[in-house]
Every structure is written in C-alpha cells, then in structure tokens.
Image 1 (cartoon, rainbow, N blue to C red):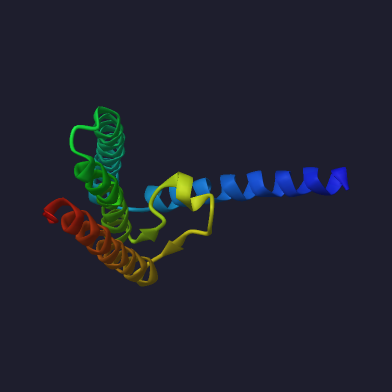
Image 2 (cartoon, rainbow, N blue to C red):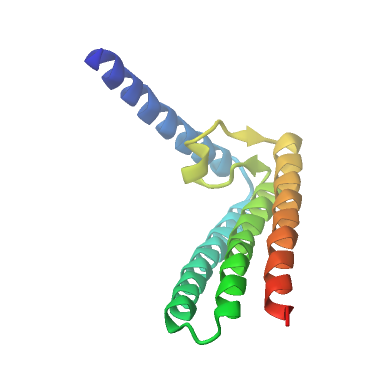
Length: 147
C-alpha cells in the first residue's frame, strides 16, 4: 500500500513536470511577439495577485476597525470581485497565447490545450468570471447602498 502511494506521488510529480515542460516547449515554438505577450501578462497577473493581497488587507482592516458595520459586509462581498481581475487576466492570457492554462502552475494540474480550443476556453473562462463578478458585485452594491 505504501508503495502505491509513493508511485502515485511520483506519477503526479512527473505529470507536473510534463505540464511545465509542455508549456515551455509550446512557448519556445512561438514567435517573439507571443513570448513578449506572455511575459507582459505574467507581470500583470503578479499585479493582480498584489491587488488581491492589498484588498484582503483592507478588508481585514475595515473588519477590525468596525466603524460602519454595513461597510464590513459590502467589503467582504466585493472581495471576490478583486479576485476576478486576476482571473480575467488569466483568461485573456490564455486567449492571446493560444494555450490553456497559460501558467506553469495551472498547467501542472491539467493537460495543456493549444490552438483554437485554448482560445475558446480562454474567452469562455473570461466570460464566466465576469458573470461571477457581476453576481458578487451586485451583492456588494446592494449591501453598500441599502439605507
């Protein structure tokens, strides 16, 4: 039984390397303009992560400060909207690059899809995430503007 777990863990790490290797190989075959686009999108995605961290810190501050309890609920309802910015960037990255998922971290979780299917997946992912943003944003707006 222990051997099976070790073998499964080894297989999972090999798949992880395969996903990263597949993405690296795909990028190596692309023209310089796409590789530049990839670098720019990765930088923007890091900015999206920083935005999420900053928004989380602000939401925690508002919760601890407790100045207006109504704002606390609205801030936490709006938190998923801050995550949407990063996810939209990932979708645009995938559509522009023609590979889904466009980052090595995500490609290790599932296989790499390229071509028109990746573009369609990226656009669909972006549309779905925007719908989620509207949903959570409506809750935040409704809570913030009540009374």
